[in-house]
Length: 116
Image (cartoon, rainbow, N blue to C red):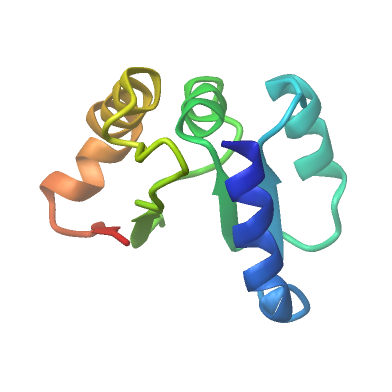
């Protein structure tokens, strides 16, 4: 959820000056986010976002995933005892992201996926 993404961004904010964060969640439309990425002077190295938003941006080629080496899936369990793999909508988006944009790197062993 966007709330959990905000918590993760807050936890990672100490790294933002050395390793810029891209916040990929909330009501921002994919095209608007692409424009924001292009306008920034510092290229983002850490992306924090929901599986759906990451998938939509990958589908339109908003960022280059060829150099991606690590994907961390936050397995936080919310108050309703749900996590990203137990909710159908996020599970399907995560699977589509993996089988689409991430599959070449994962198949070749260039990408590590951690469920944390």
